[in-house]
Length: 324
Image 1 (cartoon, one colour):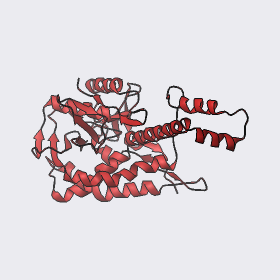
Image 2: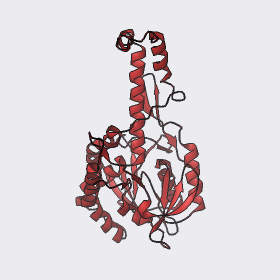
Image 3: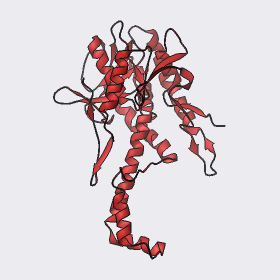
Image 4: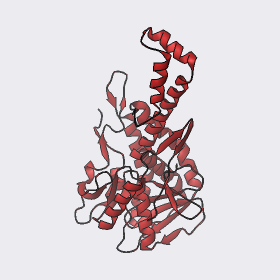
């Protein structure tokens, strides 16, 4: 039997960010509407049949959902539970492998990763159509197969070239390939994470770390020290931030540094800006905050209209600065 409501951010993880005054709820900030609401954890970061694959007979199965949940609960959850009880959390050598998998799966299961895969696949389809438009042989084969006198090479070429303009033609992919493809990346993402430098960041009193619908924040610093969001997790030199709870966050970097660092308010809010930028739509917090709402709106305005762009056959992800 398929579980209809499936979490793309683990419910156990979200429970660390509940509202102290209402422990069943979390504050949700919506990048699309600019609205804030208090919402029950059970229905937060969840969609109907989010991981469900389609069987040949059209029925649904939750094999992927079960495997993801098992991997998370058997590995990372006991470590996160221990870290939540420690002040500050102590990172043991034995924690790294299981937490690397937890972070990798949290990254690939997110709406941001799925949207990126959809966009990449859509660009691939557009480039396939471009190749067809540029080949007389392929166009002639299509005409031969259709046997329609109204279909000409000129009409086909015009239609295929029109598909290169996303303002004219939208390509939206779905199905098992879109659901399962992001998880194929986890095997490549997790092992390098173990090799990075792991450290704990502590927020100052009165300032909280926040989470989002894609809670593995990935950024790259340019030559001027500005944080760029939109880079892939495998990019050389990235810094990864993963909030543990409102007080502590995990930092992974290729640069050496202290194993524990207490941040200033300014540095904490900068990390929250990066988290809001990483979110596809929702930011989650333990409190209602005007400042956070302003940041969420700002990040929504800064985000490129399209994350995946192409010129000819060159495909790239667009990055953007999160600095105020």
